[in-house]
Image (cartoon, rainbow, N blue to C red):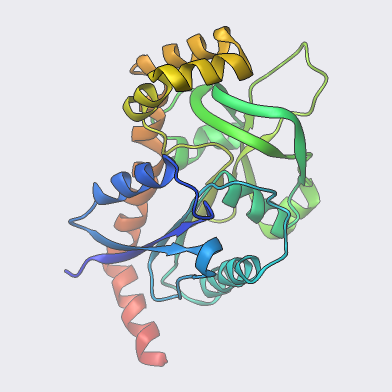
Length: 280
């Protein structure tokens, strides 16, 4: 059987980062089942067509509400075309949004308010699944709360329940409970459909890579200067614990890919794909 095609949408705007390394490594773990290409969305305004089966859209810097530039229009056109395809065709496309892409998708579909945070969310934090999230396959194998890597200047808050229902989307998770802080808890996960899901954190973050990065003396001092020693110690503890960041890394995106590959490789799906191609 031929391998499925996967597209990674790089929204990092040419900035060196750990996120793309982690996404590539996770995808390469499925090399016997998928081939992949990377599209530099913001530098080249490059977007994949509908000839791919699975898409992962990355995190990235900047304001997710920014609508200037050819790249933003290209990204939203890509997203709308995938959604339209999934409404019309039996053989679906599978999509996973990470952090910045998640915020852009929430903003595009007007599911919640996207705003700048009062201060950056930086480090490792507990994420609480909603009642629906506890039953959702994207978090299968994780307890609630689970630990996630979270680096955000922006946030999606105040979900619009009527709009969620209209779109058919479901809220899957919210950020940590802070009873001493009078601030809205951000949305941390949304499912748009059985095939399309996203999170507002970094499930691709690997404990070993992050531990090595944040243990470097220069990075350590920078984090302590900007966020305090307690924040650095908490992050190192979470990265060193096998049931925290590493469990999230090993569960969410690999689980998404496994389920997408199984669905797309099932006999009924293959027949639907053949029939759809024949009708063109």
